Image (tube, rainbow, N blue to C red; front, side):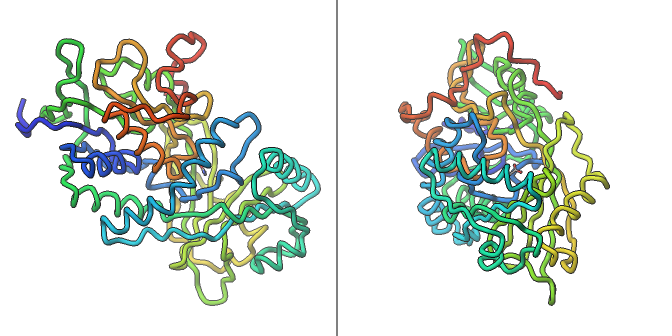
Length: 392
Ligand code: GLY
Protein backbone atom coordinates (compact mmCIF):
# COMPACT_ATOMS: atom_id res chain seq x y z
CA UNK A 1 0.00 0.00 0.00
CA UNK A 2 1.31 3.46 -0.84
CA UNK A 3 0.00 6.94 -0.17
CA UNK A 4 0.45 9.98 1.99
CA UNK A 5 2.32 9.05 5.17
CA UNK A 6 0.75 11.90 7.09
CA UNK A 7 -1.99 10.92 9.54
CA UNK A 8 -4.91 13.30 9.31
CA UNK A 9 -7.12 14.24 12.22
CA UNK A 10 -10.05 13.72 9.89
CA UNK A 11 -10.59 12.02 6.54
CA UNK A 12 -13.74 13.07 4.70
CA UNK A 13 -14.98 10.60 2.08
CA UNK A 14 -17.10 12.35 -0.55
CA UNK A 15 -16.67 15.69 -2.29
CA UNK A 16 -20.23 16.96 -2.61
CA UNK A 17 -21.28 20.10 -0.77
CA UNK A 18 -21.72 18.26 2.53
CA UNK A 19 -18.20 16.79 2.42
CA UNK A 20 -16.65 20.01 1.17
CA UNK A 21 -18.32 22.04 3.93
CA UNK A 22 -17.38 19.54 6.65
CA UNK A 23 -13.76 19.50 5.43
CA UNK A 24 -13.54 23.29 5.27
CA UNK A 25 -15.17 23.85 8.68
CA UNK A 26 -13.00 21.17 10.32
CA UNK A 27 -9.83 22.66 8.82
CA UNK A 28 -10.92 26.12 9.92
CA UNK A 29 -11.15 24.76 13.48
CA UNK A 30 -7.56 23.66 13.31
CA UNK A 31 -7.94 20.00 12.39
CA UNK A 32 -5.79 18.45 9.67
CA UNK A 33 -8.16 17.20 6.97
CA UNK A 34 -7.83 14.87 4.00
CA UNK A 35 -10.72 14.80 1.52
CA UNK A 36 -11.25 11.84 -0.81
CA UNK A 37 -13.22 12.91 -3.86
CA UNK A 38 -14.09 10.64 -6.78
CA UNK A 39 -15.94 13.39 -8.69
CA UNK A 40 -18.99 11.25 -9.47
CA UNK A 41 -20.76 12.59 -12.55
CA UNK A 42 -24.30 12.16 -11.17
CA UNK A 43 -23.77 13.52 -7.68
CA UNK A 44 -26.68 15.45 -6.27
CA UNK A 45 -24.50 18.51 -5.62
CA UNK A 46 -23.93 18.97 -9.35
CA UNK A 47 -27.45 18.17 -10.53
CA UNK A 48 -29.35 20.15 -7.88
CA UNK A 49 -31.22 23.39 -8.52
CA UNK A 50 -30.12 25.04 -5.28
CA UNK A 51 -33.55 25.84 -3.86
CA UNK A 52 -33.47 26.85 -0.20
CA UNK A 53 -37.16 26.37 0.34
CA UNK A 54 -38.34 24.93 3.68
CA UNK A 55 -41.75 26.59 3.34
CA UNK A 56 -42.44 25.65 -0.27
CA UNK A 57 -41.07 22.11 0.00
CA UNK A 58 -43.15 21.28 3.07
CA UNK A 59 -44.85 17.89 2.95
CA UNK A 60 -47.39 16.39 5.38
CA UNK A 61 -45.73 14.28 8.06
CA UNK A 62 -42.33 15.96 7.65
CA UNK A 63 -42.40 18.25 10.68
CA UNK A 64 -38.97 17.13 11.89
CA UNK A 65 -37.50 17.82 8.46
CA UNK A 66 -39.19 21.23 8.41
CA UNK A 67 -37.47 22.15 11.67
CA UNK A 68 -34.06 21.08 10.32
CA UNK A 69 -34.65 22.89 7.04
CA UNK A 70 -35.68 26.10 8.78
CA UNK A 71 -32.71 25.95 11.12
CA UNK A 72 -30.33 25.52 8.21
CA UNK A 73 -32.02 28.21 6.10
CA UNK A 74 -31.54 30.61 9.01
CA UNK A 75 -27.80 29.90 8.93
CA UNK A 76 -27.49 30.58 5.21
CA UNK A 77 -26.78 34.32 5.16
CA UNK A 78 -23.86 33.95 7.55
CA UNK A 79 -22.68 30.72 5.93
CA UNK A 80 -22.60 32.39 2.51
CA UNK A 81 -20.77 35.44 3.85
CA UNK A 82 -18.16 33.18 5.44
CA UNK A 83 -17.72 30.94 2.39
CA UNK A 84 -17.41 33.94 0.10
CA UNK A 85 -14.90 35.64 2.38
CA UNK A 86 -12.88 32.44 2.82
CA UNK A 87 -12.83 31.61 -0.90
CA UNK A 88 -12.93 34.99 -2.62
CA UNK A 89 -15.76 33.58 -4.77
CA UNK A 90 -19.40 34.57 -5.18
CA UNK A 91 -21.96 31.76 -4.69
CA UNK A 92 -24.92 33.70 -6.15
CA UNK A 93 -27.16 33.48 -3.08
CA UNK A 94 -30.42 35.13 -4.16
CA UNK A 95 -33.07 36.25 -1.70
CA UNK A 96 -35.69 36.07 -4.41
CA UNK A 97 -38.60 34.31 -2.69
CA UNK A 98 -40.59 31.46 -4.23
CA UNK A 99 -44.01 31.43 -5.86
CA UNK A 100 -45.94 28.16 -6.07
CA UNK A 101 -48.69 28.25 -8.71
CA UNK A 102 -51.58 26.08 -9.86
CA UNK A 103 -52.93 25.53 -13.35
CA UNK A 104 -56.22 23.60 -13.09
CA UNK A 105 -58.87 23.21 -10.38
CA UNK A 106 -57.22 20.11 -8.93
CA UNK A 107 -53.90 21.93 -8.79
CA UNK A 108 -55.58 24.83 -6.98
CA UNK A 109 -56.92 22.40 -4.35
CA UNK A 110 -53.44 20.92 -3.85
CA UNK A 111 -51.84 24.37 -3.52
CA UNK A 112 -54.57 25.36 -1.04
CA UNK A 113 -53.73 22.28 1.02
CA UNK A 114 -50.05 23.28 1.00
CA UNK A 115 -51.01 26.80 2.10
CA UNK A 116 -53.11 25.53 5.03
CA UNK A 117 -50.27 23.25 6.10
CA UNK A 118 -47.83 26.17 5.93
CA UNK A 119 -50.15 28.34 8.01
CA UNK A 120 -50.65 25.56 10.56
CA UNK A 121 -46.92 25.66 11.17
CA UNK A 122 -46.90 29.45 11.38
CA UNK A 123 -44.81 29.82 8.23
CA UNK A 124 -44.67 33.00 6.18
CA UNK A 125 -46.85 32.38 3.13
CA UNK A 126 -49.40 34.45 1.24
CA UNK A 127 -52.30 33.06 -0.80
CA UNK A 128 -52.67 34.86 -4.17
CA UNK A 129 -55.22 34.85 -6.98
CA UNK A 130 -54.01 34.21 -10.53
CA UNK A 131 -53.94 37.91 -11.41
CA UNK A 132 -51.87 38.71 -8.31
CA UNK A 133 -49.45 35.89 -9.19
CA UNK A 134 -48.98 37.39 -12.66
CA UNK A 135 -48.53 40.88 -11.23
CA UNK A 136 -45.77 39.55 -8.98
CA UNK A 137 -44.27 37.42 -11.73
CA UNK A 138 -45.13 38.71 -15.23
CA UNK A 139 -43.47 35.71 -16.91
CA UNK A 140 -46.35 33.46 -15.79
CA UNK A 141 -48.90 32.12 -18.25
CA UNK A 142 -52.39 33.62 -18.31
CA UNK A 143 -53.80 30.19 -17.41
CA UNK A 144 -52.31 30.28 -13.90
CA UNK A 145 -55.27 30.24 -11.50
CA UNK A 146 -53.64 31.06 -8.22
CA UNK A 147 -50.72 30.40 -5.97
CA UNK A 148 -48.83 30.85 -2.73
CA UNK A 149 -45.94 33.25 -2.27
CA UNK A 150 -43.22 32.25 0.19
CA UNK A 151 -41.04 35.37 0.38
CA UNK A 152 -38.44 33.75 2.64
CA UNK A 153 -37.64 30.76 0.40
CA UNK A 154 -34.48 31.62 -1.50
CA UNK A 155 -31.83 29.94 -3.69
CA UNK A 156 -28.10 29.55 -4.16
CA UNK A 157 -26.10 28.47 -7.21
CA UNK A 158 -25.13 25.00 -5.99
CA UNK A 159 -22.30 24.61 -8.52
CA UNK A 160 -20.75 27.92 -7.51
CA UNK A 161 -21.24 26.95 -3.87
CA UNK A 162 -19.35 23.70 -4.40
CA UNK A 163 -16.50 25.55 -6.13
CA UNK A 164 -16.29 28.13 -3.37
CA UNK A 165 -16.31 25.49 -0.63
CA UNK A 166 -13.52 23.63 -2.41
CA UNK A 167 -11.45 26.80 -2.63
CA UNK A 168 -12.18 27.75 0.99
CA UNK A 169 -11.13 24.28 2.07
CA UNK A 170 -7.91 24.42 0.07
CA UNK A 171 -7.05 27.81 1.59
CA UNK A 172 -7.73 26.40 5.06
CA UNK A 173 -5.35 23.50 4.40
CA UNK A 174 -7.66 20.67 3.27
CA UNK A 175 -5.68 18.11 1.25
CA UNK A 176 -7.81 16.69 -1.56
CA UNK A 177 -7.05 13.23 -2.88
CA UNK A 178 -8.76 12.42 -6.18
CA UNK A 179 -9.83 8.79 -6.16
CA UNK A 180 -12.44 6.31 -5.00
CA UNK A 181 -12.45 5.23 -1.38
CA UNK A 182 -13.02 1.46 -1.19
CA UNK A 183 -12.84 0.57 2.50
CA UNK A 184 -12.03 1.71 5.97
CA UNK A 185 -9.50 -0.32 7.89
CA UNK A 186 -9.75 -0.33 11.64
CA UNK A 187 -7.49 -1.37 14.47
CA UNK A 188 -8.71 -2.18 17.97
CA UNK A 189 -12.27 -1.26 16.93
CA UNK A 190 -11.33 2.25 15.79
CA UNK A 191 -10.85 3.71 12.32
CA UNK A 192 -7.28 3.80 11.14
CA UNK A 193 -7.04 4.21 7.37
CA UNK A 194 -9.15 4.95 4.32
CA UNK A 195 -8.00 2.66 1.50
CA UNK A 196 -8.57 3.81 -2.07
CA UNK A 197 -9.29 1.74 -5.18
CA UNK A 198 -5.73 2.25 -6.43
CA UNK A 199 -4.37 0.78 -3.19
CA UNK A 200 -3.20 4.09 -1.73
CA UNK A 201 -4.09 4.87 1.86
CA UNK A 202 -5.12 7.86 3.88
CA UNK A 203 -4.39 7.32 7.59
CA UNK A 204 -6.83 9.25 9.79
CA UNK A 205 -7.98 9.34 13.41
CA UNK A 206 -11.60 10.00 12.40
CA UNK A 207 -13.50 9.38 9.18
CA UNK A 208 -16.63 11.23 8.02
CA UNK A 209 -18.55 9.52 5.22
CA UNK A 210 -20.32 12.10 3.05
CA UNK A 211 -20.65 10.13 -0.16
CA UNK A 212 -24.36 10.66 -0.75
CA UNK A 213 -26.17 7.65 -2.21
CA UNK A 214 -22.81 5.91 -2.70
CA UNK A 215 -21.98 6.00 1.03
CA UNK A 216 -23.01 2.37 1.36
CA UNK A 217 -20.38 1.22 -1.13
CA UNK A 218 -17.58 1.93 1.34
CA UNK A 219 -16.62 -1.27 3.15
CA UNK A 220 -15.79 -1.41 6.83
CA UNK A 221 -18.43 1.08 7.98
CA UNK A 222 -20.86 -1.33 9.62
CA UNK A 223 -23.42 -1.29 6.81
CA UNK A 224 -25.88 1.38 7.97
CA UNK A 225 -25.63 3.50 4.83
CA UNK A 226 -25.92 0.48 2.54
CA UNK A 227 -29.05 -0.63 4.38
CA UNK A 228 -30.77 2.72 4.66
CA UNK A 229 -29.76 5.05 1.80
CA UNK A 230 -31.10 4.58 -1.71
CA UNK A 231 -30.70 6.65 -4.89
CA UNK A 232 -33.67 8.78 -5.94
CA UNK A 233 -33.17 9.89 -9.51
CA UNK A 234 -33.87 13.45 -10.61
CA UNK A 235 -33.72 14.60 -14.20
CA UNK A 236 -33.17 18.32 -14.58
CA UNK A 237 -32.59 20.86 -17.35
CA UNK A 238 -30.47 23.97 -17.64
CA UNK A 239 -31.66 26.72 -19.95
CA UNK A 240 -30.25 30.12 -20.75
CA UNK A 241 -32.03 33.41 -21.33
CA UNK A 242 -32.10 34.89 -24.83
CA UNK A 243 -33.55 38.16 -26.09
CA UNK A 244 -37.38 37.90 -26.15
CA UNK A 245 -37.41 34.89 -23.78
CA UNK A 246 -39.35 36.30 -20.81
CA UNK A 247 -38.15 34.32 -17.82
CA UNK A 248 -39.12 34.61 -14.13
CA UNK A 249 -37.35 36.77 -11.56
CA UNK A 250 -37.99 34.44 -8.64
CA UNK A 251 -38.21 30.68 -8.16
CA UNK A 252 -41.49 29.34 -9.54
CA UNK A 253 -42.87 25.98 -8.51
CA UNK A 254 -45.97 24.71 -10.21
CA UNK A 255 -48.48 21.94 -10.29
CA UNK A 256 -49.49 21.30 -13.89
CA UNK A 257 -52.47 18.93 -14.04
CA UNK A 258 -51.03 17.20 -10.99
CA UNK A 259 -47.38 17.10 -12.13
CA UNK A 260 -44.85 19.14 -10.14
CA UNK A 261 -42.24 21.25 -11.92
CA UNK A 262 -39.99 24.08 -10.79
CA UNK A 263 -37.92 26.80 -12.43
CA UNK A 264 -35.03 28.48 -10.61
CA UNK A 265 -33.67 31.64 -12.30
CA UNK A 266 -30.08 32.73 -11.68
CA UNK A 267 -28.95 36.32 -11.90
CA UNK A 268 -26.59 35.35 -14.75
CA UNK A 269 -29.45 34.25 -17.04
CA UNK A 270 -29.44 30.52 -16.29
CA UNK A 271 -32.82 28.90 -15.61
CA UNK A 272 -32.82 25.48 -13.94
CA UNK A 273 -35.96 23.45 -14.65
CA UNK A 274 -36.60 20.27 -12.72
CA UNK A 275 -36.96 17.71 -11.52
CA UNK A 276 -38.26 14.19 -11.75
CA UNK A 277 -38.44 11.86 -8.73
CA UNK A 278 -37.75 8.33 -9.93
CA UNK A 279 -37.01 5.09 -8.11
CA UNK A 280 -34.61 3.69 -10.72
CA UNK A 281 -31.74 2.42 -8.60
CA UNK A 282 -28.35 3.53 -9.89
CA UNK A 283 -29.64 4.40 -13.35
CA UNK A 284 -28.96 8.04 -14.22
CA UNK A 285 -29.94 7.96 -17.88
CA UNK A 286 -31.47 11.13 -19.26
CA UNK A 287 -34.67 10.02 -20.97
CA UNK A 288 -36.50 11.69 -23.83
CA UNK A 289 -39.79 11.34 -21.99
CA UNK A 290 -38.61 13.18 -18.89
CA UNK A 291 -37.05 16.01 -20.90
CA UNK A 292 -40.28 16.32 -22.87
CA UNK A 293 -42.44 16.36 -19.74
CA UNK A 294 -40.30 18.94 -17.93
CA UNK A 295 -40.32 21.26 -20.95
CA UNK A 296 -44.05 20.74 -21.54
CA UNK A 297 -44.99 21.46 -17.92
CA UNK A 298 -42.46 24.27 -17.53
CA UNK A 299 -43.72 25.93 -20.68
CA UNK A 300 -47.34 25.60 -19.56
CA UNK A 301 -46.66 27.98 -16.65
CA UNK A 302 -43.73 29.96 -18.10
CA UNK A 303 -44.26 30.31 -21.86
CA UNK A 304 -40.94 32.15 -22.27
CA UNK A 305 -39.17 28.84 -21.75
CA UNK A 306 -39.92 28.05 -25.39
CA UNK A 307 -37.55 30.83 -26.49
CA UNK A 308 -34.73 30.03 -24.06
CA UNK A 309 -31.65 28.09 -25.11
CA UNK A 310 -31.60 24.51 -23.83
CA UNK A 311 -28.00 24.02 -22.72
CA UNK A 312 -28.00 20.91 -20.53
CA UNK A 313 -30.17 17.88 -19.86
CA UNK A 314 -28.85 16.05 -16.81
CA UNK A 315 -29.68 13.57 -14.10
CA UNK A 316 -28.57 13.23 -10.51
CA UNK A 317 -29.08 10.70 -7.74
CA UNK A 318 -30.42 12.11 -4.49
CA UNK A 319 -29.45 10.10 -1.41
CA UNK A 320 -32.86 9.21 0.03
CA UNK A 321 -33.77 7.63 3.38
CA UNK A 322 -37.01 5.92 4.49
CA UNK A 323 -38.13 8.93 6.57
CA UNK A 324 -36.61 11.63 4.33
CA UNK A 325 -34.31 12.77 7.13
CA UNK A 326 -30.52 12.71 6.84
CA UNK A 327 -28.19 10.50 8.83
CA UNK A 328 -25.83 12.62 10.92
CA UNK A 329 -23.53 11.13 13.53
CA UNK A 330 -22.31 7.74 14.64
CA UNK A 331 -23.94 4.86 12.76
CA UNK A 332 -25.33 1.93 14.71
CA UNK A 333 -23.44 -0.98 16.18
CA UNK A 334 -20.92 -2.58 13.89
CA UNK A 335 -19.38 0.74 12.94
CA UNK A 336 -15.84 1.38 14.16
CA UNK A 337 -15.13 4.13 16.67
CA UNK A 338 -14.19 7.39 15.04
CA UNK A 339 -16.61 6.92 12.14
CA UNK A 340 -19.31 9.49 11.44
CA UNK A 341 -21.93 9.53 8.74
CA UNK A 342 -23.33 12.71 7.15
CA UNK A 343 -25.43 11.50 4.24
CA UNK A 344 -28.98 10.77 3.14
CA UNK A 345 -30.04 14.40 2.69
CA UNK A 346 -32.54 13.51 -0.04
CA UNK A 347 -34.15 16.56 -1.61
CA UNK A 348 -32.52 18.98 0.83
CA UNK A 349 -28.76 18.55 0.66
CA UNK A 350 -27.90 22.07 -0.49
CA UNK A 351 -30.24 23.59 2.10
CA UNK A 352 -28.98 21.38 4.94
CA UNK A 353 -25.28 21.92 4.25
CA UNK A 354 -24.59 24.68 6.84
CA UNK A 355 -26.41 22.88 9.65
CA UNK A 356 -24.86 19.51 8.81
CA UNK A 357 -21.32 20.83 8.59
CA UNK A 358 -21.62 22.63 11.92
CA UNK A 359 -23.14 19.55 13.59
CA UNK A 360 -20.44 17.22 12.27
CA UNK A 361 -17.58 19.49 13.24
CA UNK A 362 -19.11 19.86 16.71
CA UNK A 363 -19.23 16.05 16.95
CA UNK A 364 -15.58 15.88 15.90
CA UNK A 365 -14.93 18.29 18.76
CA UNK A 366 -16.87 16.03 21.13
CA UNK A 367 -19.98 18.21 21.28
CA UNK A 368 -23.46 16.98 20.31
CA UNK A 369 -25.49 19.88 18.96
CA UNK A 370 -29.03 20.03 20.39
CA UNK A 371 -32.13 19.42 18.26
CA UNK A 372 -30.67 16.76 15.99
CA UNK A 373 -32.18 13.62 17.53
CA UNK A 374 -34.45 13.10 14.53
CA UNK A 375 -31.49 12.61 12.23
CA UNK A 376 -29.30 10.41 14.41
CA UNK A 377 -27.43 8.01 12.15
CA UNK A 378 -28.25 5.03 14.38
CA UNK A 379 -32.04 5.49 14.44
CA UNK A 380 -32.76 2.54 12.14
CA UNK A 381 -30.40 0.16 13.93
CA UNK A 382 -33.14 -1.77 15.73
CA UNK A 383 -35.70 -1.64 12.92
CA UNK A 384 -35.74 -4.88 10.93
CA UNK A 385 -38.37 -3.45 8.57
CA UNK A 386 -35.83 -0.97 7.21
CA UNK A 387 -33.61 -2.12 4.91
CA UNK A 388 -32.18 -3.49 1.95
CA UNK A 389 -30.99 -0.28 0.38
CA UNK A 390 -33.96 -0.58 -1.98
CA UNK A 391 -33.08 0.36 -5.50
CA UNK A 392 -29.56 -1.00 -5.33
N1 GLY B 1 -35.28 19.96 -3.77
C1 GLY B 1 -35.62 19.79 -5.11
C2 GLY B 1 -35.39 18.45 -5.65
O1 GLY B 1 -34.91 17.58 -4.94
O2 GLY B 1 -35.70 18.24 -6.80
